Length: 144
Ligand SMILES: [Zn+2]
Ligand SMILES: [Zn+2]
Image (cartoon, rainbow, N blue to C red; front, side, top):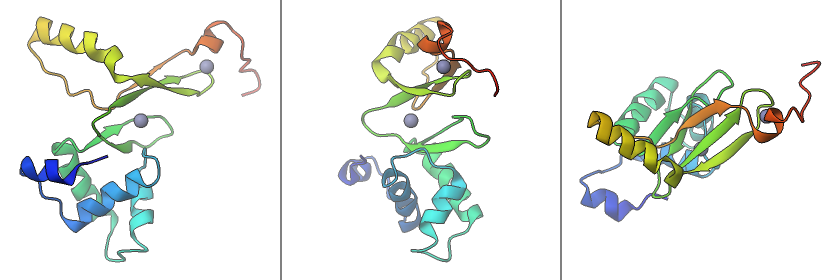
């Protein structure tokens, strides 16, 4: 969760609109599309429209309070970046999705830093591949 006091210490002040966007995402377990965010805000704030949502999403991405990730399904999804980051492994064969612990990416971050002097902002990553079951051929994809 976002700590308002900490945000203020970092000189970040959130407008009511940005606060509403963050609340819409956290109150529904994250991973919302811009359209889904709008649907959740409109009942409370009928003046909100999709371009306002996008404009505020851009700003929240710049502040790294949000991450945008392609989790499949044709549209990107927005997730709040909290203290505890998480990532996803998505199986391109059966579509299953498992959570990946952030500390498993520490090696990648430091290798990139050493090799390229580049500090990566890996806040919410989706990696595609084959899950353990599909690798073993345990799940049939016939008839799909
Ligand atoms: Zn996620
Ligand atoms: Zn699979």
